[in-house]
Image 1 (spheres, rainbow over the protein chains, first blue to last red):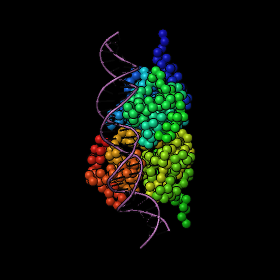
Image 2 (image 1 turned 90 degrees about the vertical axis):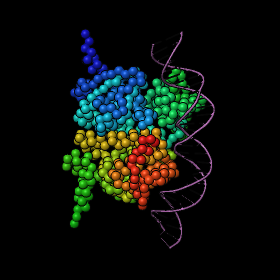
Image 3 (image 1 turned 135 degrees about the vertical axis):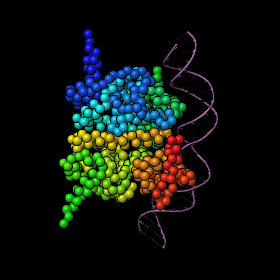
Image 4 (image 1 turned 180 degrees about the horizontal axis):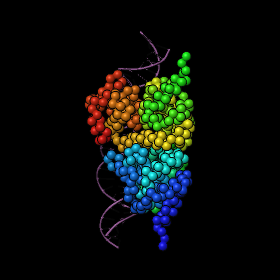
Length: 232
Length: 232
DNA sequence: ACATAAAAATGATTTATATCATATTAATTT
DNA sequence: AAATTAATATGATATAAATCATTTTTATGT
């Protein structure tokens, strides 16, 4: 009979190794993380962690896709990032108040790995190279937030949608077509209303800057989008 | 004759110790930082470090006040934070591309301490408690950025100005009156134009929510401001 | 296959905020 | 003290984007 625990363990170590960050850990450290993890399946639309709730685990999506968003004061969401597999979802609360400062929702059926945050911090404390790379990841997402911040406060609708589409194409879907993202979500990425988003997307479609088939958005003219982003 | 080097050294260690973070370092580590630092005076309006330039040193303002801002694509600035003495100005670039992703300008005549970033990182690598506290500081500023992001994308003029004034009063000037900050700077903190900022400030003055004498802004009714922030 | 719900689309209207133009006051510089 | 520059103030006007009201299309559940 197959030892299911063992199987999950091996799977997980595989999952760990898919993020180059974990290559910096030795077997003992990997085992430590592995022995303090749980794996949970989420259906599309389910919340993986919720803003304000205790931050007890860091989350790695091993299969699927998520959106990381801040719930604004009157129900309006601001999407900070679209989360692909193997990225570490810690969040600034893990070193401040042990609370989540944003929510993570599954955009498609997803599998998520929960690692005890204290164990994770212990590994960071013990392995300074790993710590440094963790800070690096954190910093990279920070740089993206900065640039999104400027875009949303200083660019017009076309510029903001163009930036969001370029982000989705290049950073999230790695040059594939954009899937599983609704107009409302593009609105939440850009701080616009869904109606405005729909109008700009239609404008881009009419100008053959983008195309859409079967809910898949393809970017036909990246230069045009870049121009919108630059002029916006 | 007084040994000036020694004097600056002692001063600096004093400056280090004013930030509780440095209490976590041992003498050897403090010496290491101390031996790899320079102190520079800046006049009001001078740039301490410039967005895009190489990040070779972390900066601690030991006297004075600064503004940390992102220079937007078409000349419009976004102020991320007002920087008081003893705070560490690293920035996300120090673990990514060794470039500054924002600029720091002196708001009044200021003294700034430059510490070699590689030495600073070496200390972080060697002292895991210090590293953890550094991540904590970084995370706290991150949480503030998140909240400012939501405010600027989801609140109206009054709400944004109210949030900025509360930030200045409580976080920057520690319940003293708000000084050295122009209308243009409040505009850059809120993503508004200076004209709109002037109008809202006047509205707040008329309603006796704030008062201004000799360029010093006093908050007369914090509850009213909080209400504007909540409803905005 | 039908019913229900969710997403996308569209036009009309409103409104919050920016822009423009100009004046006044305060702060620096010469 | 005069001249120049920077900051604040104010009114008129324009406009980008939100809001509101419906409709159409697509997806999901029973």
